[in-house]
Length: 321
Image (cartoon, rainbow, N blue to C red):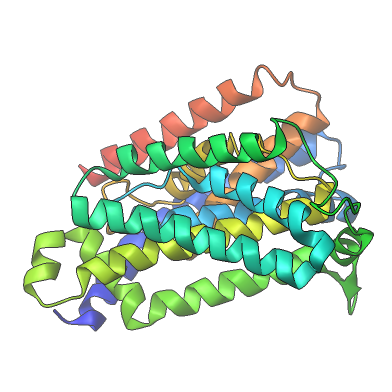
């Protein structure tokens, strides 16, 4: 299997999707500017939008890696919640220790997902749903179902985390720097052989296996990296909010999958891109932000997002046929 041919094919297929997603984004930005009477385009609003959704970017990219293999990871939100709790519980012993524990837990969860999906050959939906329930249950047991602000040794959450999140370097806020950095890192990963393997495995698992590709390793790595990215999202959540929350991440699954599909990723695998997923996320962020600015009822907002997802999937399906 020629990796250059795989990459070229993927690039050609994604161009039309990128153009479509960009068009949707520009239309939404125009509508947002008009409805908010210019408030949307103010720098303060744009920076706040990045700060609020930085953690979601990590979850979207995590979900993209798994979707490319033809799978789905429903445990992403649970990993975010668990990481936020571990950071708070162990930060009294030092922030580096807490971060290391959260990352190790994420590696174990992701590897478990990957191993069960790959070697038991069960649907990823079923496996990751079960793991999601287990992790959420553990998170609630560890916190008695409540938000936490104290570590195991009784120390309050360090303010240094929130101060770090609000810092600026050369006039650029930390969340923006982190977002740009992770986009670059994942984009580079997609250009190396294991990135190309994701497309090959998702496009045709049997053909990839016959061609001698390490399909099992590729699958396990996808789920493991996915969980690590979600753990970082959990760390960012603690930095921004200042608590560990066992209920955080309950809606992240839907938003992450929606961003990937809006950006042109195929849930059957083998099709999608980092740029498409990022644009898809930007569409959701603009939509959420403008609905908040014009005071759309929180009860109606999921309905509007659901309709947009259905329309996007319908258009992509029709175009494919």
